[in-house]
Image (cartoon, rainbow, N blue to C red; front, top):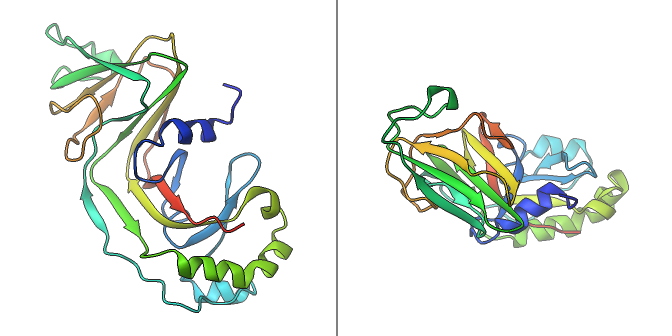
Length: 235
C-alpha cells in the first residue's frame, strides 16, 4: 500500500455520511469539536488550541471568536453495526460446531461473519455502543476566526502552509473500536457478535463484537476516540 494509509482509509470509507473516517482515531480530549490543529508529515495530530479555551487563546496571542460558538445537544444513544468499505464481501460463518476459544470468539456468539476484500483494498470498522455525536451548529464563526487569526497562526506555525489547518466541528466517538485495512486475496476476517446483527452497519444494530485473534492487520483502541470527524479547513 504505497498511498498514505490514513488518506486511503478515509477515501474508501467516504460512503458513510459521518465525516472523515480516521485511520488512527484520536482521543476526544484533543480531537473533539472546537479543537484546532494540524497533521504533520507523519500523520501525527498537533493540537494548537481549543476555541472555547479563552486563557489558552490569549496566552498564544490569538484573538477570541467574535461570534457565539453554539454547541448542539450531544446525541449519545447511537449504535452501529460493522462499518465496511464498498468492496468488502461478508459471509455468515457456520458456528454449529462451536468456535475455537483460541480465536477470541466465544462459543456463545449469536453470529459470526467472515469479511473478505473482493478487489484492491478494503476496510472494516467495529465500534462499541454507544457512539456519541458531538458538533457545533454552523461553520461560519470558525471560518471568520481563522481569517482574523491567519497572520499570527501562519507566523507561529509555518508548517501549516503545507499541511493545512483543521478546526474540528463534529465528531462521532466511541470508547472502543477496531480497524482493519487489508488487500484483496487474503483470507476473510472473522468477527463474532453477541446479537444477530446485519453483516453491514445499520443504525440500531450494535452489540458486543469479538474479532478473531488469529487475524492480522487489526488496530484496536480502548480509550474514547473519534472514529469520524468533520473539519473546517481554513488554509
